[in-house]
Image (cartoon, rainbow, N blue to C red; front, top):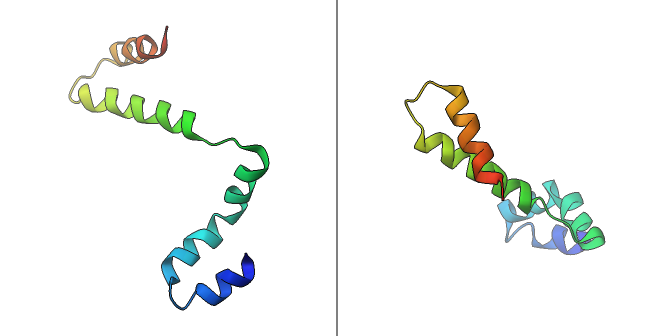
Length: 72
């Protein structure tokens, strides 16, 4: 795979750089079959709550809304 990356660099310059920067994480996925998708989803939901509450200054309301979003 690393030999292919060297050959493909001339055609796919930026893509190859990105793959090389993240190669360890990519390989770890195939070893353990886990991703950070769950955490990314949590972060996105919190960001959405923050956007919806733009302009409000009460942290307790934000905290309550965030906790309510994740309680089942």
